[in-house]
Length: 100
Figure 1: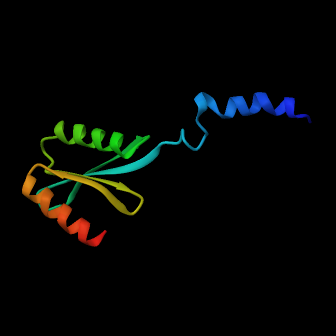
Figure 2: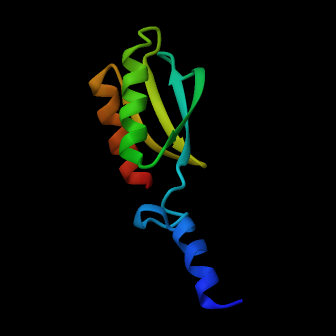
């Protein structure tokens, strides 16, 4: 096989200048919590970036008034948390920074 055979194959794989790995979206677990940090509901969010996943999680929390907080997990690590009570969110961030 000559190099001319591979050129169309490479063009098909590297679409829009992005490698196949760059096109893979990450799968996040979105946990909706009650006032005692118990999990009330779970959703999966597929997003290209953490920022996109955070935006989706915030929108979902806003549309679900029965839940007090949302956590976004990637594998075994909590990547984001937002609570309706801002004081709780600040306590979590201080704790997370000291552990992380």
